[in-house]
Image (tube, rainbow, N blue to C red; front, side):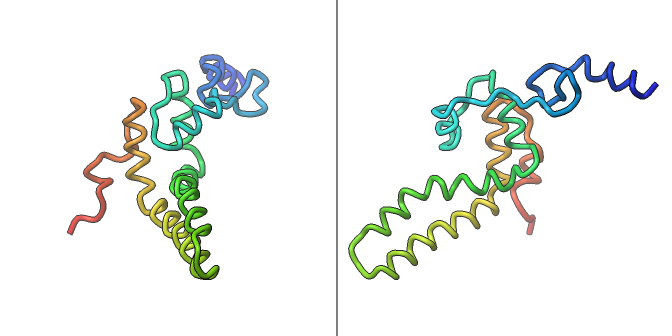
Length: 139
């Protein structure tokens, strides 16, 4: 009986919504945007509606916080390289570059929930937490 219920539940799923494949062995991943779309998404752009399942998985799936926290250092990387190439003592230039990257990782983790909700709304999805609960600690 349980096998029949599982088959009936899987039959109603749409490919690309994070469901399992017809064989039931592994999850079907949503349609991923092309490289140019990923870069555009990385810097804050809104993807077309056909990528909404992928955006939803990216912002609510496992390890979403790590993905959100890794975006600011990727955007900061060109600036860190620029500071490393400026004239001056090598240890000072490297210290500034490393500090920029470490600080953006910390800020990325600290603001991941807020920016996740903003990006969910930006793509027409419901936020995970209501805005008043996501603002931080009430004093």
